[in-house]
Image (tube, rainbow over all chains, first blue to last red; front, side, top):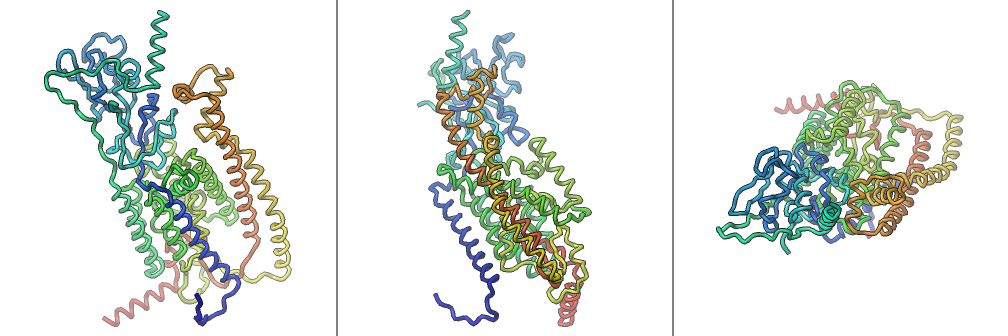
Length: 189
Length: 431
């Protein structure tokens, strides 16, 4: 491309260098954008816990930037045994086998026990009470079917660029997943 | 008793490896009970992030118009407050251009990670605007800058040598942030973002304290984070040096009244500089020649220091941390275990494979740390060269790199006021 535009002032060495660097900067930005945009997936990413890797250490309850952690316990009903003697619900060696607060394992009483039919009970998590401490998850994994597990609840999570819980997670269970499939649910295979 | 313990141990091991074990087969209900499904509340829609990009573009364009054409501090201030409200308190400081440096870096180094297009735009757009109009982003759009600008009460002047010295913090911060992001260790900038806790009105106590400290310092030192710490400012400064259009203080001739210099809380306005006497000039030239010679030495020293720091820095990577801990436990140096080492053992991997992974990460750290160290040596050398060069200047000018495009100087310039007034009179007479 030739340009025969009459310049008002001759281009000095300094100006020429500056113009060249300006173009180079713009090209550099374009190249960076191009290189990074070349990657296949461009889905927005959100944080999620891989229940297979989680070791129920309890850091989810304490390390979230929110006052009330965005991590909550969820119940996989298809895996749950609906046991009368639920280790996720009751303390080890409880004073009595009933719904008294002194017998419950959950520190906030967030597990709701409902009678279904003899001898089965349905256990549901009250998310407004759950603090994501994973005490029930651990007990259910050790003594039960492992139907209780932790998940990042996306109606609460503010999706920090670096999740504080992920930075503290000792097992590397926190992952960036596609926002199109934001949960890693435990289901019956 | 022993057999019970063994049984318990086996069950613990099984439960941590496998999941959904059917110790108690799910019941067949007779009473027509239907299994509830686990609720999955959806995350914020993607539209929110595209709205952010749209607001960013609009704010940058409006900012450029207000600073360069309208030349009004009041309007720029208004836009700044809007940006603080929107990007800061409404969008809670995430997504942000400063943090996007790390997403871009991670994408370039980790093929498994892909940056969302919106985050890429947040990184690129402010830089493109800077190449054209100067640091509009800093002055009118960045919520971190805005919150500091709002608390500024009584700015004290920072001597130029101290300013240049403190700015090395920003270069080091950028270097480390890129190193940690490239190795996939941590997002340092997000972890120590001082104002995000204030935007969210919730967060970790140390980060809150950090933010409060910056704001208290910010009462007297204008925008301390922007000037001395912000890693994005390092890139913005270089783009701003080349920008097509930028803040120009006097539309007509400068009368050297110094009012603009007084008005600028960032020390970003430079006064007239007479030509050097011949003797000083010769001495200055010798100094620059000497500095150019020791520049490679500084780069080498920086690289060497980086090499020394590499093992320490690599502790930032979780794999290296775990390997370190597992090795200590295997040697018997420590008797207890941590969650991290327990989690590793539960994964069923061999320590040897962990050590191999850690060694690979550490090798990356050696290369990375040497490069970061050499970069810092180079920056230091160039800074020394820069402070030994004096350029002749006739009037007061906004610094090419340091000007944050806040438009304060316009308000104080008497020539500007005169021009404004005549403009108004012209408009008035026409009516």
